[in-house]
Length: 224
Length: 225
Image (cartoon, rainbow over all chains, first blue to last red; front, top):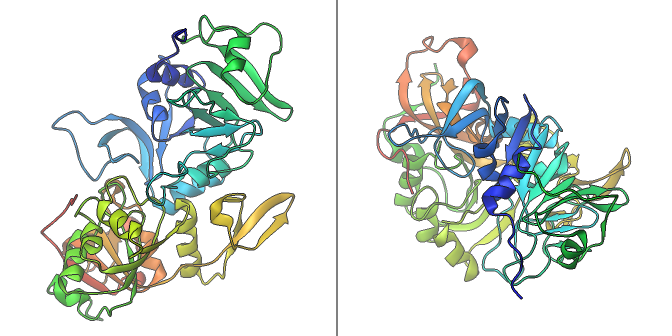
């Protein structure tokens, strides 16, 4: 029997955007997190941080507007919002590591029930892997959200008891947002906060290796 | 006044020996010393240790050095999805690589620049990058010892230099450049424009001249790769 519909990558980003508050300083990683800027709730201003030394990144540059000295961490030409600033890469990571950002959102290959994150290398893949800023960000973020698909393309769970992939950081993730669920990482384990429309907590659990705790009724994911 | 201005890119890199440890500025296509890299490659240098956030974008940026087999070891945070010449050499065992978390790469360079002999950090604890490093607990937090990273030369890109070597940078092309400028014995900067001493307002100087040893104007390749 085919699975029920899951959230799209854009919908995961849309849900994650609702975790950001007005005035927050936020770093967005590669993958799904990079889509979040398109879904900010109306009426709020968020100061996006880029590890190459920008605070206050705006939308992507339109054709003809690109300046290749003004790019985000994915090499995409961007714009600035009023109040933006530039600084060097060391200060950019001082912000990530030193707990100065309010929220960081990273992509993930695996998250463990303790909040360990693996997101820089797939075992058996070619090459040495790419750490980039992910280890600094995961070590220092006040609030680390991971956005990813709930399962691999082969259906294997990505929320696991223990990560089998090379780790990015230990006990660092606060919240996991997937195409099936919003899950909080607590001292006592993983708590299912919301489930995708049409999915029961038991059905989400069946797609998850780690144990999910359920506290009362689990509402549907609200995209706002 | 000490003469720091070189008339050509080739002259600016002429004495960099084979086997040198060299830092290269730049991130995301911005702020790479592409013309100095071309000159270094052109001179046929061999066996260098390269310290750079990434490992080139196809033939661009550091890519040419990997394509030509001029790098023996590289220290990088994010080799990158388009670093195909690095990846080919790495797969064949012709290049070794130390992966370093990006902010820690910066801080190791800053430690070298600041005369510090290392620092403890929670970054990388419990991961592959902690292998072989001293681990301890400070204030209840597991942390590892990271040591300073110095280089013989830093090749960087700035927008403007005055004749003394005070530098300004353009937009996000600043990135690693000011940090590397401080962490090498000899820093060589390529700039869009050289201006008379006094024409950069002191409060606008990002890299003070004390860190800059050679200046060369480069009009050629701005974005490579």
